[in-house]
Image (cartoon, rainbow over all chains, first blue to last red; front, side, top):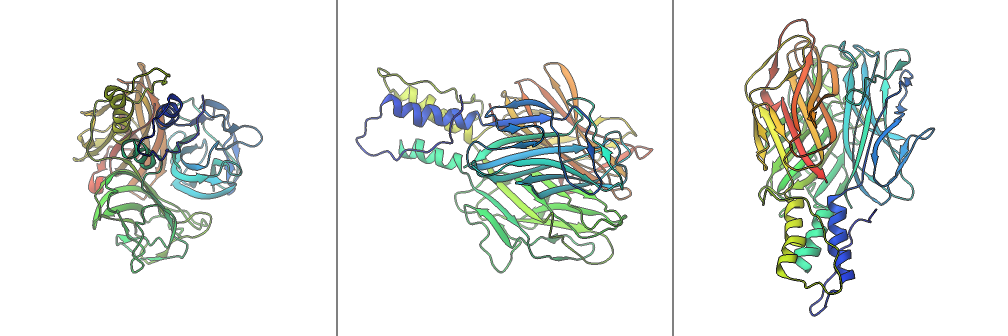
Length: 175
Length: 330
């Protein structure tokens, strides 16, 4: 069952709460706060990332999407069911970026505002992760995690299974 | 009901939080820890950015003490291939946690080292996002596709009741007797758990030698924050089933480092990898953030791989090598 973020009641002296009140203001409130909407996905298929251009990650394996916010190909976006702050974590793993800068990028409505940089290493499947809270409006906004690399040519993402692949995770954290 | 239920829920559903960005470039001097000015508060529901004379200062408001999740990023405009470019933060003038330390690349106009951490903050504490660069001259921050920013979000109280389970709310029926016991379970314990969920921050205090090209878990690491006593030796054991945000960071005297979280979930060992990087010679810092759904008893051992060609030592200054876990949801 999906629930809306809590809207606490202003209780007044003498009011006798009915079961419906208690279910709304106690049961549903704590269900929402303790079972937050969660989206987790990772990339099992290789994706080519062009040089010097941010590309949204094509997350083809959904682990969970408790409020059904994900739209896959060709959009690759997650839309929130309610206005609020969402914690987004993700990582971009590359198969071919060595000694060259690569960024994990977090974008809202296609604007890649939040980035984290690393210089790709000679280790297998170098990657870079990111973490950021963003405010999203239910009716208009979407969020994506993407990657950019500057090797001078297109480079494939790296995927060796659930534990070493590009990923995105989203949780509701605040109204 | 107003104070114990509605006001508690109002706080938990919109806790103290700030997101501030820098939109006017700042000159960062060479080889000096420098506070990053944040001239554009995007959200600041407890008015912590209230010092127009010093835009680098976030001051914790009265009534907003607690454990905070900190995310800071410092976009720097440089293409130096040898300099150390780092992100860190301070509390009351003391550097508390270090994040990425990387180099840039010729022809690339900017890069963005980042720091994540769990930090204990008291009312009136002053938090500053900071950076360090060793290009040999002053450089500017970068404002454009990326920019410096700081996010602080209250996630827990500093003290509370540990050992509770996540709320499992009952459905109320017409003939239920609303007893004190029921309200203690359904309201008091729910608020207590959600305001004091399991969290852990463990920091390495002694330098560790990491062999070449072998995933190695951290040793000599001890918890400063660990309200469910989940850390022991080199292992964090999940105390309560749920979805956790796990972060790890490491400083290493090696050019190539790869961060990993080795988890044992239902006896299946997985090593989750995050950031890999080629840092400046002999001084790389890497970090990672990963959300995992865990069962009570699952374990995590943070560690890393480096392939400098020989053993390399970790860095322990400014809590450079550490692990954090935070219960987020059932």
